[in-house]
Image (cartoon, rainbow, N blue to C red; front, side, top):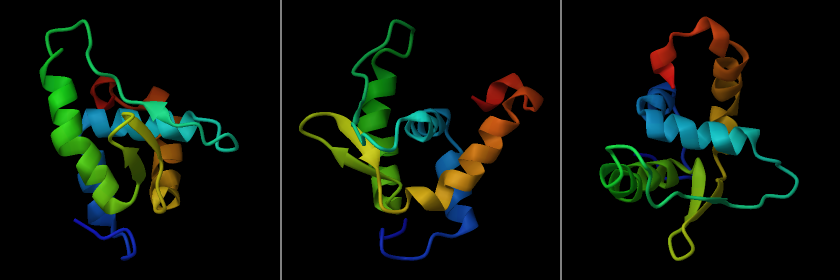
Length: 109
């Protein structure tokens, strides 16, 4: 993983986008109002069968990985996420995905 001060490589971006939970979070930040920079609250549970696994993997795998790459800043105490210093490095690919989401298979998100 990368220190947020190091250069981000395409393989890093693909690694980050390899999981649907990470993609969903990054897309939420992309759609979020950049002027307000109000944090997104990370959900603690859901109604589906992954109600326990999703929050655990989010807090122990996905959020740390995104923070290590500098794509997010994660306030663990308040369970809030904002765009990190390297978010603009991944923004063009996220925008490309959302601009062409109707052409992508259903499984991408």
